Image 1 (cartoon, helix red, strand yellow):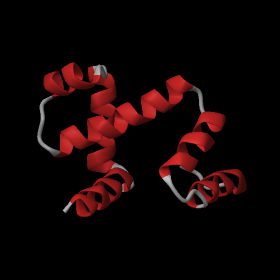
Image 2 (cartoon, helix red, strand yellow):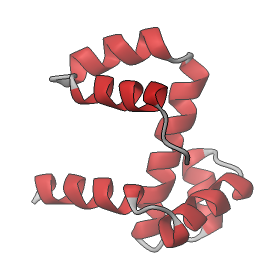
Image 3 (cartoon, rainbow, N blue to C red):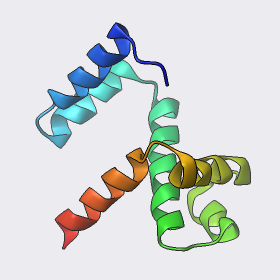
Length: 95
């Protein structure tokens, strides 16, 4: 993804959020319900892929298409490491 001043500003705004309630309020203003559902679905798909679940099980559990699952998997394997980093931090907090 090409960096830009607008994208930097967007990502900086995320870093200003202090708790989950602020996240709900901000993202409700920023995104449509469908966009938020799609984003949360992708993160859940990434979680299940890291757990070694198969595409059919992931599709059944999340409602994601195999195309979406494949795209998320490509990001996990060849992407910038964002999913891996965030999921590792989430796992660390659970421990």
